[in-house]
Amino acid sequence: MKVNITETVLRDANQSLIATRMPFEDFEGILEKFDDAGYYSLECWGGATFDSCLRFLNEDPWERLRKIKSKVKKTKLQMLLRGQNLLGYKHYPDDVVRKFIQLSVDAGMDIIRVFDALNDYRNIKASVDEIIKQKAHAQGVIAYTLSPIHNLENYAKLGKELENMGVSSICVKDMAGIMGPKEAYDLIKTLKETVKLPIFLHTHSTTGLGPITYLKAVEAGCDGVDTAISSFSGGTSQPATETLNYSFKQMGFETGLNEKALKEINDFFKPVKDKYINSGLLDSFVLGTDTDALVYQVPGGMLSNLISQLKQQNAMNRLEEVLEETPRVRKDLGYPPLVTPMSQMVGTQAAANVLSGGRYKVVMKEVKAYIKGEYGKAPGEVDQELIKQVLGDEKPITCRPADLLEPTFEKTKAEIAGIAKTDEDIMSYILFPQVAEKFFKEREERAATKVSYTIVKV
Ligand code: CO
Image 1 (cartoon, rainbow, N blue to C red):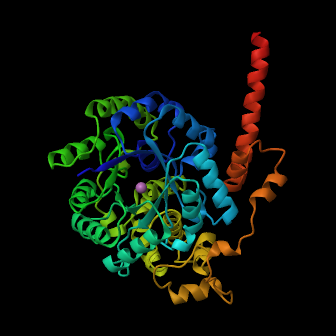
Image 2 (cartoon, rainbow, N blue to C red):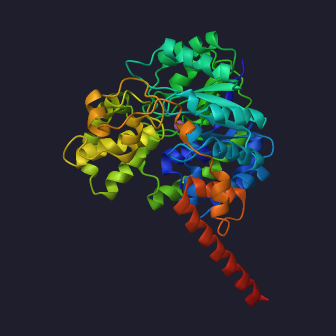
Image 3 (cartoon, rainbow, N blue to C red):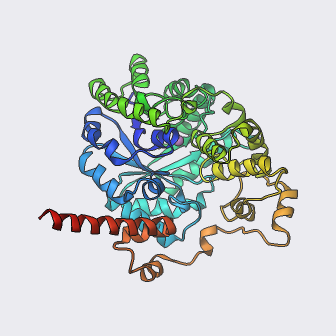
């Protein structure tokens, strides 16, 4: 049996270990080598990479994707998309969602893994539909979480729902790294018995369960797993590619991976990692095994975000309290899985509850919107008292949230004709207006400097 391996070093490992701050120039030199390694796919875009390119790295994310595609010719490129939220943190209208997918596929994307934080599939319907229309691979996600309301029966129902939507495969996404080996075995077995599609599993090494969980998942018939090259593996990142490859092969599974190429890729990334450790970008805290996550269910990305947030506010000494408050906030909100944007929402609200000297003394704007139903339907019951406190006389939304949104792409295009050069620019602007505008301005300035420099040189 074949186990397909997706390499995450450029996206999830990058995002989980160093807050997505890896610039293109730091991995450009190894891109061609990925084609020799035999990966099923290379996760290299989406998630937080888009925001980070524009906000911190002064890179055009679309340009990054095209440059990767020009060097990685054989291996399928993969991205993570937050359904109706695309790569931002709110719902966008359907015309924007469809345009975003068209542009992504045009720029070279092959596999689009699309999820909704609440497993409310009304929120991924437009994306899945457009991915299929663009003849790309739509991978639907079941966001995994532990809660009194999430059980095998519920997950099987979600799998069936995805299959009926026409996705090409399903990914069970355990962002917090809380799935244990038996849970993996039972869940994958249930899904394989329920649907005919390939099933992929995504987890993190946060709690140390990752590799054991993957092994049992594969024994239950799992078709593929996500791993990170060893120098960027472990901790809040994925389990190591080489370690899993070694184990799978020993157990009689085929991976198609080439050990020599893996070694070269890892040797390339070792000094890159050292550089990040020396600059302080890579905090050793995220590399360890933290079994507290089995209690707190805090995903890798969320943990590193919380740490940097508390550091900024000089409140690192309150980390324990915030981590203890997190599951309580989650219960109040009807057990949303802790994936973006719910993870940020729950984390920030938990921090506010601790730091502002009273629970819900300050209610985040996003939490209010969630309670109102603007993100979709909560998996469980939202605390009645909290609804009353937050909404007052306002009425909650019960329809698909995006049905309330007017088309905006063409309108925005007309509005910002002066500052945006392409449809990709317009899309960047729709997702992150201020950040994109600043980026366009600086890009213009750089281009101008380049021209005058050339003239002087001549
Ligand atoms: Co992840």
